[in-house]
Length: 285
Image 1 (cartoon, rainbow, N blue to C red):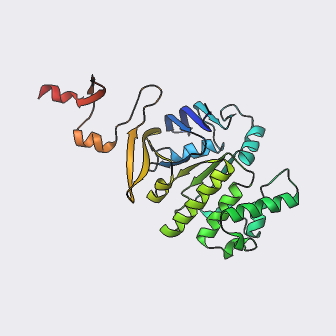
Image 2: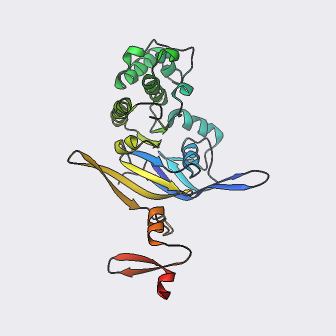
Image 3: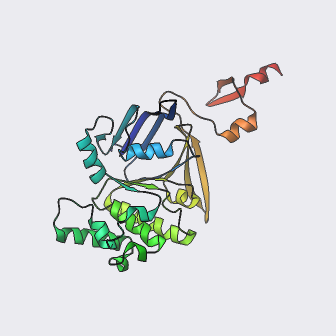
């Protein structure tokens, strides 16, 4: 059995200031299997950005376990973290221009992070990435001469320059129209398959969700639901399941709670092969 590329168990992250503590992650579990593209969704403050920073090894969890492509992100030294950020995880931030150096052309930008290879090999690898992302024509254009879609493709090429196992992308289609976004996501998926990499993308764009293998919703610092989109006679249909963590806990969607009027204490019992939940107040009606 092939090991997951990402394996997070019980991740906790607490931000401490002089006046208060903020628990950003509260026992989050997540696995990403080889060749998967996973979209992360959730409200502001749910823990999405913290998770991405931990996967990028920009931050270290307060508690829990996280392995990425065989690297223990809890116990790595700073030297190992630098190597991880350079070679294992490529990160595309939300603003595409923030990924680019303005006084270098597109080809030079893609070559910039490459280490340990000759100049000829750098050019060859950069050309290959631009070709895979269908932007060979912009190789000698500077960032200010690129459209939003072109800049985002160059940003992905930069993130993939050192052949990482993991691509992280924060709102990769936020500044793209629907048609441009669809083409971008299609080409990125093809690139990931060809390079044997996985991707985790934070998004509010439902089109990104439909190009992902799974959509994971984070709520209150934990994974709460998982959605898989499938196409049925030309229409996308969502199959949604709840995620139970390793301690046996799960979060009911807010819509379920409101519809059933659940609050405070609830009763749960097994009926056949189902678990049924009801409000304690129902016992007194």
